[in-house]
Image 1: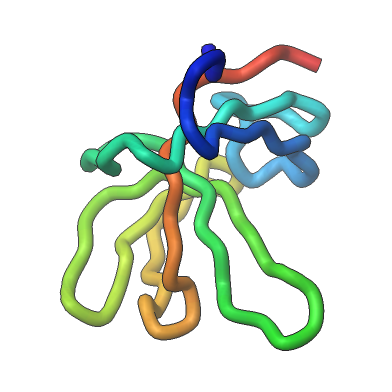
Image 2: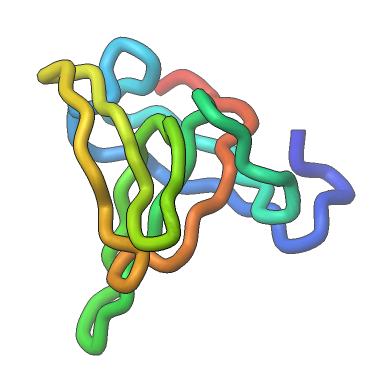
Length: 97
């Protein structure tokens, strides 16, 4: 799925907040070059001086200051501040655990 995709990468998922779409142990394929569309799942990256922080959520919408996202377990919507969570990359497929 990522063959020939410049800067494409895969991540190993931990946590259950996106179950049943993604389960712990799934390998998620990410294409950072594709535009992020509403209702697509993404990896969000936060600024950090220590360790990189990342989370996988469903992108819903954006304002100038926030991303609106959804998780499935437990099912809830919330906002991520764009100043902290600067980067989002689109998930394009998964390999099951």
